[in-house]
Length: 207
Image (cartoon, rainbow, N blue to C red; front, side, top):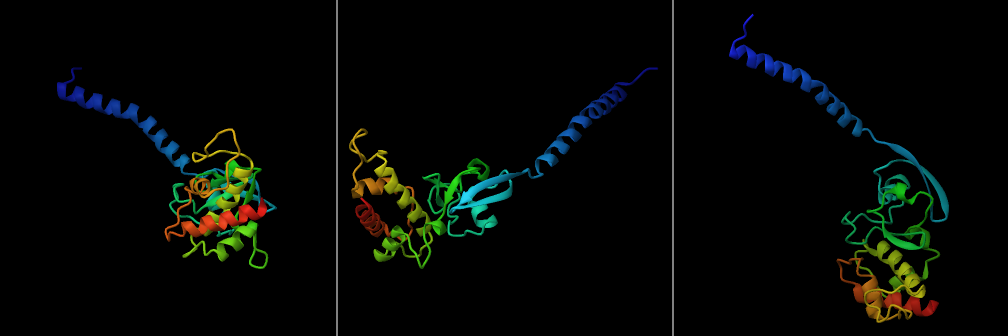
C-alpha cells in the first residue's frame, strides 16, 4: 500500500495531535486544581485574645483582620505597602499588614488600633493625636498611631535609623529622627507637623 505525499502529511498531523492531547488535558486539569483554594488553620493572638481562623493560604493579614475578624480600624490604602495605612504591631514590631500573609503570622501577637485603646480609655498616643489635631480625614490615622507607638519603642531599644548621627550611641528623640522613622506612613492631608508634635509629647512624658 502506497501513501501519497498528501496522505502522509495528514497522517503525521493526526498522529502528532494524538500524542499532544494527553499533556494538554493534564495541563488543564493542573490549572483547574490550582484555582482551588488551600485552607489552613491559623492561630494568632489579636489584641490580647487568641483567634483561630481557617484561611486561604493567600489571605493577607490585613484581609484576615478586616474581613474575618471585622477589625476595620486598619485601613487598606495602596495595598502595596507604600502608604502605611494598614500598619499594625506584630510581636512588638510594626509591619504593613497588606504585605504579610496571615499564615506567616501564625502564633504571633498582633495589636491593631482597636487594641491600643477605646473611646472611654484612650492610649496616650491616641489622646495626643486628638490634642494636637494630628489628623484631618482620619483614614491614615490608625496606621500612623500604631507606627508612632512602635517608633518610640524602637528609639528606646536603641535601634538606629538613617537619620541617627551614630550607630553605637542611643538615638535621640528629636524631630529629624521621628520624621525619618515615620516616613513610611503617608498623610494625604498633610498633618505631618501635628503628628510629630503628638509623638514628641508622648515620648517625653513616657521617658
